Length: 124
Figure 1 (tube, helix red, strand yellow):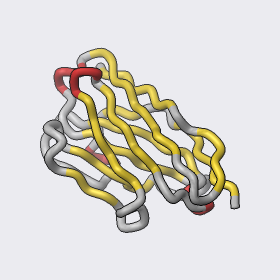
Figure 2 (cartoon, one colour):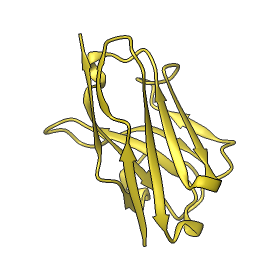
Figure 3 (cartoon, helix red, strand yellow):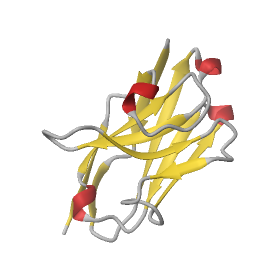
């Protein structure tokens, strides 16, 4: 099993920045792709960004491309999401995820493990 714990969420003004972290523990040697998703109340969880094990391949949702940057430090079993130029519509709960398979995916069903979520609130 793998446990994922997010941190770094909080309240920020529009135009500001936050960096989310996701620390993995347990059987981390099985982890390959890692990703971030977000979910608003009453809506489906949506893809934000994903990164391959090597970090050489990344993918972003159109809504965050150019503003968010995903990265990872395999030595620390941690991935990050740097969020810049935040907008009020970015206000949701963010979840980190990891999958055992290779290849970047955008669908939640591809991911095996999930964090508990961290709230990001952007004030206008």
